[in-house]
Length: 264
Length: 257
Ligand SMILES: Nc1ncnc2c1ncn2[C@@H]1O[C@H](COP(=O)(O)OP(=O)(O)OP(=O)(O)O)[C@@H](O)[C@H]1O
Ligand SMILES: [Mg+2]
Image 1 (cartoon, rainbow over the protein chains, first blue to last red):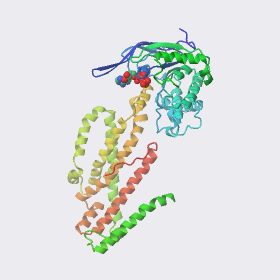
Image 2 (cartoon, rainbow over the protein chains, first blue to last red):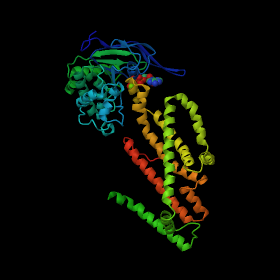
Image 3 (tube, helix red, strand yellow):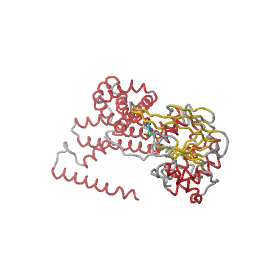
Image 4 (cartoon, chains in turn red, green):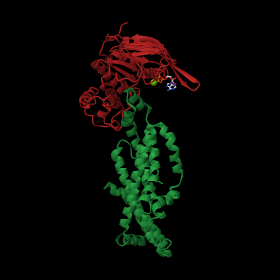
């Protein structure tokens, strides 16, 4: 297996199956899924709405229990929520009663890490995501894009080696989204974390990822995994290259003509 | 300056209202034991504070209302938190609370006077009882009404129940708690007056009864004015505290009976 960045597998998923039950009704969300994500790799997951992407993320974080299958994170099976994972949700999920800095420090508070030491780190991270100087403001005083960047800083603060992101830029306009893609690539390159990134946007997936996992409609399984060999750091110029266009075209074909949010 | 201009219109309307009222009473020679003229009410108000020690009575009623309000609210917060932390407690305690709530406090007020005497203690108990429920209901609602995303965020970090309580549920409940407190503070003045109606020898409620017996309707109106000043002051103070404490949530206007 060839992975950008080398190293061992950060995440190993084997025969994962998830069935939601409510009374007699059963919804099969994920039907047998195998995936390896290498250390420091950036993997994007695309698939039609309702194919089980968010479910997959909840299983990896241990927020939900799989019906069957095995998930191994850094060599240890996932049996519940773990501090070696940072999560960015679709919405920023910031607490309005905490300042931006205190929001970023929330993981440190919960994990009982020394606040003094982590305050410096949080400030550096806010600087990194372009929010230097906004520490003492409250989330409701920031724009949507700024809030999402604060959420990214929060996911990074306890230095978890794996970052899971569930359509983090879904609510942003196209311009801000491009900006955020560039920044995320920069942050990823600087922090050298493993990232699993869920998105509806094919172009976003191809732009960001080392490998793009394309999922089938529900019940979710993997249709194909496409490697993107384009060198880092990529620029918006690169999205105009024939190579990039071919990959986008290929993924769109797999998803069936680009019904679901194919445009960036 | 803007505030002054803002208040100018309602103030003008109020003055015209008083003038028309005064004119009707004088013009139609309405007897003062039915409806007093504003000037008579003002006179009674002045005499009340200079001769009849309205201030002392207002202090007593105010103390009963505030002490009962604080006691009832603290109890409501404590029971509410307990019910949410230990779901068993909800099934055991809640039916009694609802049963208690469905009994009109006016009905049990005489009993409470029998148990706790004619003094301020019985009024504080009555006020605490009427303040308890709106706070309790809102505390439970607020502690429970937590976004699934926020819960997931905390869970994903491996937060304990206590940490979820401290970092998420408690602050999340605060706007709800204040909604309950806003209702309770209005109830608290009503509760104190009800208590005084049933049995007291001090307080604004006691004075209102006296004025009614003496057919001194101007004094009764003056006492209503005292009551509304007390109510408005307490409510405004609470609003001010609310804006400081739950600065992130817009100060909503709540139903005021
Ligand atoms: N808590 C739940 N109970 C029952 N069914 C659920 C639950 N959560 C998700 N599902 C079902 O599982 C399937 C996959 O849902 P999931 O949220 O993982 O999709 P998704 O790929 O993230 O979709 P989207 O791209 O729209 O966010 C859906 O059909 C959904 O109805
Ligand atoms: Mg989803």
